[in-house]
Image 1 (tube, rainbow, N blue to C red):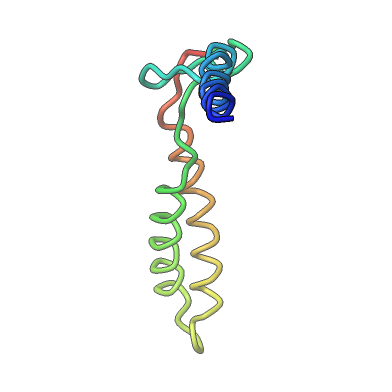
Image 2: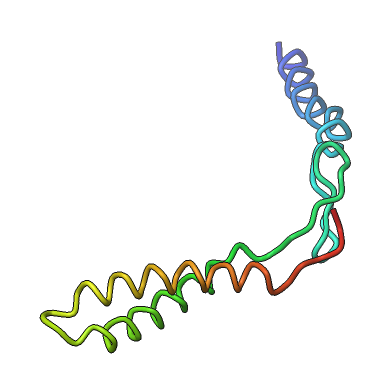
Length: 101
């Protein structure tokens, strides 16, 4: 019984090792700003525009609040933040384009 349990334990340890080459073929290989996906296609890493969105929203809110001088100025702040966020995101995404496809 003891030999059978040891054989079962050894087999359970060997099975993941035997399947390792198949699993590694599906991993992504990174080399800087580019990588190969699971199908072997070359992919690029690029900015998604989050930093520009945040900075643009903050700047737009301040500018919108300064322009709207009547009442509570909430409308100008909200409109300015929305416009600034859209503009900031597009500027950030268009800044760094890479040649790879």
